[in-house]
Length: 261
Length: 247
Image (cartoon, rainbow over all chains, first blue to last red; front, side, top):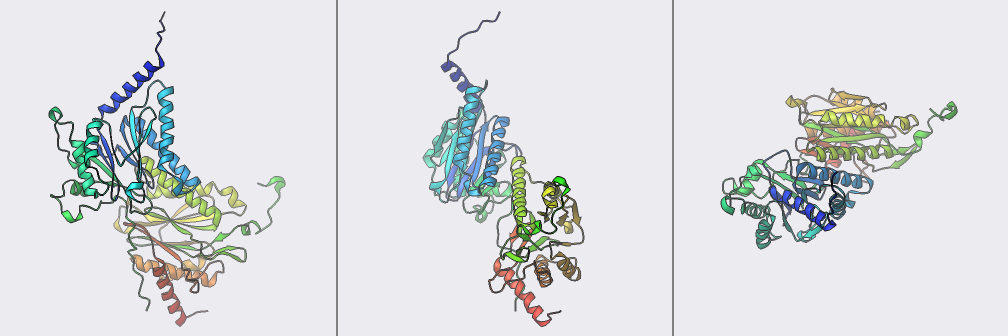
């Protein structure tokens, strides 16, 4: 007959934490930081289709590290909640804070009630009218939520990456400067014997929440626009600071009114 | 359908709520133009002079509504949310045909209310990102209250009470190979013709400076023409008609 051994709740929680932390530390890192023109997400991600960074709503973006199926689940729930709220009330009533607390509830109850915690760490970012109004929330596997001061790193060797960001981050950075800092931080770890390495644009997933855009502010920065931002010397420099939009920009109407005279 | 097989008093329910009227759409080699007048009526009364009945459904398609305004605006809002929700969850937009099919299903679900007088018929048009032939990027879809979906291959279509007149106007003036600006001008003129002969369609209101809503969907996305631009178009039509008023 099987023997039932007693394990204290402290021990159970410690084991779960350790399990989740190990899972998260195994993956590649993601960096989120505010800059003058909005909020920048940079993930080390070789896949162009399985995203670590995505859009939740008009002003809200989502970034995650850990197990793909688990954070994808959370992302879907977030999009559903945001769309439902925006439809029931108004688009302005969808906030990053409400979303972060919903995620905290979900992660917290999964951590304490289910056999295995989610091995994920996520960031909910909301872009404001000015850099000081940007909100970055860090949510961890146990459901704890923290308001981060303008920059954060998750996954892999997050501590070391965070230290570089803390030393050099400034809200007055342009997109180019902010991206350079993010790439510098991400590439500072993981080389031979803990040395720095070089990250090519193809290894990065980059997106921004652009403060000045009307409506949906989330844009991915890909292809030539990304290469130009990462290596401004190689590409034509003047264009480097404008992210190439995937979807159309709200430009003034192209059609000209016929002459009234 | 009703208890005791009672029939509805004819024409009564249709006047219960504001009614939105004429919408026209024209396809060109670059995309589509959709325009709508600004009037909503309740029976013989004008319920609104500045209602907006043409809206972007997503970054590449437009929806215009005719019929019961409240139901139509709700339908349009839900449609916008569904398209955006799908795009965010799947990471890719629905195809233009997929969007049209979804809208057809939503119309069918309103059939019960439609039979009681609260019908709504949309006009859907968009820029087809998957178009095989370069000239066939702008596509127009029309619907019936039972959820029937019909693609219009003739290059233009109109819905609403003034559609008869708007279509007759376009039938004479439309030609293939129009530019977006020319198509927009034609759409404004078609709405002028509809307003000329249909009391439920509003013409350009030069006193209050209320002009039709004109939107385009092209490779650059959806755009709404500014009030100054539509005002200039309306003035062009008015100036031309002042010389030849017709009967």
